Length: 230
Image 1 (cartoon, rainbow, N blue to C red):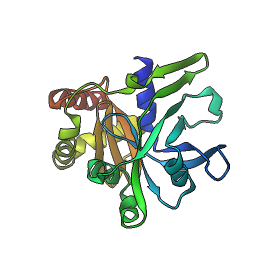
Image 2 (cartoon, rainbow, N blue to C red; image 1 turned 60 degrees about the vertical axis):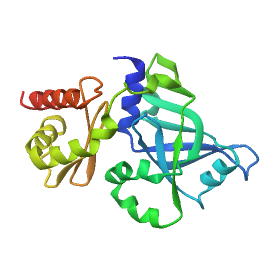
Image 3 (cartoon, rainbow, N blue to C red; image 1 turned 45 degrees about the vertical axis):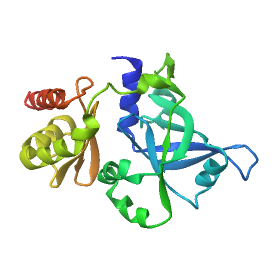
C-alpha cells in the first residue's frame, strides 16, 4: 500500500482534529483549536464552523490553515499522524456537502439553523508519519482518490445496504470489532471503505483497495462479507 493511501485512510478513520489558524487577535501567532471534520469525495477536509468562533475569525482574515490528526494510543509520537496544510474557504453551496456531513454527524443538523457554515481545506502539502522512521512529505494531489462515480452512487448504495444487507453489516461488526450492536446503519461510502453507525458509535471498514464505480464497490463489499465469514 502506498504512503498516500495510508495517509488518506488515516484521515478517513478520524472524526476530530486539531485545527491551526493564524491568529488575528495575537498578531500572527499560530492558534490551535478542536474541530470535527469529514472528507469529501475529493479527500478534502470539510468542517462546520461557527461564525463566532476564534478560528473562523482568523480564517476570514487569513485563509491559511492546517489540520492535524493522529492515531489514538498511549504515546502520540510512536503512532501514525498527519498534518495537512492549505487554504480554508467557506463553501457557498452547502447542499454539496450537507447530506453526507449530517449522515456522519446527525446532531449537527441544529447547527445549520444557527450561525454555522461549511468550510473546506484544499491541501497544498501533507506531512505523513506512519510510525518510527516512516516520515514523508506528500504532494497534495497524492491524496486524490481515483477518478470515479462514488459521489453519485453513495446515497443509493447506503439505502440498498441498510434495506437489503443489514446482516452483512452486522457480520462486519462481529468479525472486525467483536460487537453485536442493537442499532445499526451504514452512513458513508467512499473510495476507501464504508462508515457504519453501531449503537451510536461510528465504525470504519476499509476496502482491500480503492474502488471507483458501482461494480468495484460490489466486489469490495463482497470481499468484506467473505472475510467476515472466516
